Image (cartoon, rainbow over all chains, first blue to last red; front, side):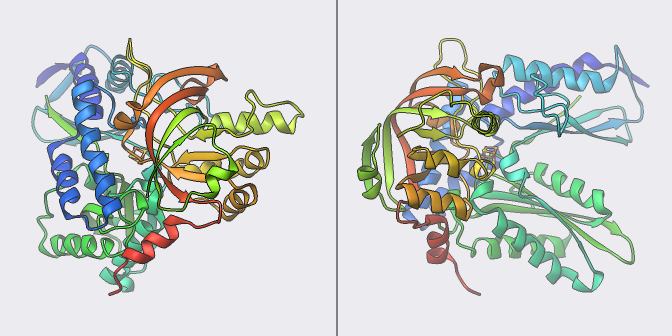
Length: 280
Length: 184
Ligand code: SF4
């Protein structure tokens, strides 16, 4: 049994929130920089040029990459040999977010109730996904999610007979409808299988995967390549103003499902696909 | 075409703009997003008057991050426009001349743009750090309690925006995608 003070979790999240809102992970920097080279539309190239310059300014002058510094989504994998001390883990997570968003001059974009809509003024609560794993380590992934793209996300409950073609159609439909609203070039997270909620969580998790990586399942890796190609023929382009670079990456995750179903979750993210992980 | 434009802009200026033009905008603009639009609309419904004279003004749909000490403003890129579509036609009919945001607009907004000779500009979503460098001053002028959603008066210098919907009703989101799409 390893004792871990929850204050360490707060401290880590505070740092991670400030860091990832000012400096994107290297996979995203590579993809955005390469997209500027690949884009054929002159306006699209100019826009991607703005995005590259934006990343530089954000990092060097400590101005958030985007003003929508997101709702904090957290995946936390807790080793079953860890014993938390010093307080409640959920409070500690929210405390880390609270401190990061205050000290980092990040925007407070969370309302406490979806209908009454009063801002909580500290960007809490976070959305937290816990899982218990083997070992005595804690793995935290933070993904501050902007809502321009979140709002364009979809869940489709397909029929098994629709198969992989149905999945492709669903993804292309979601991306086409997202268009300029999702601040393309996008990263598309897809979750196939599970249940209604599982496919959505898988899609979210897919967005936190290194955007330069491929699935380890051969047919899924092929699907990622094919979907990216098809999306980039849609013509939406950077900022939705026309071009080839509509998406930078498609990450797909799969899970077992029921004999009667084929759930597909599509979590759309913009080029400001913030994800950062730390092991404690 | 690259164009330099200074506020206040008039219907004569907007008449010369075409969807696809790259414009460097300077002068005075105002921020307003969801909560400010809702409050302006509720105020008008209740027979009240707006906290600013909307005639000839450009509204930037923006909720910035807090300014660091000594800075004018934080990150300052556009938010998605469609959530303001419910409110925009009435403001355009009252004389608002321009909007800066990102994302598709509904037909009633496009019709109001044409009817009033207004313009819808896009700034690049997710370029808030870069765009903030074009803002030389920022001052809350109304609805301070709304925090990031308060109405701010911004002085801007060469803010890069693109004409998406012009006063003739051309819509770059519709036309550009046709130009670049590849049929399988
Ligand atoms: S969709 Fe992404 S890039 Fe666009 S405003 Fe939201 S967080 Fe920023």
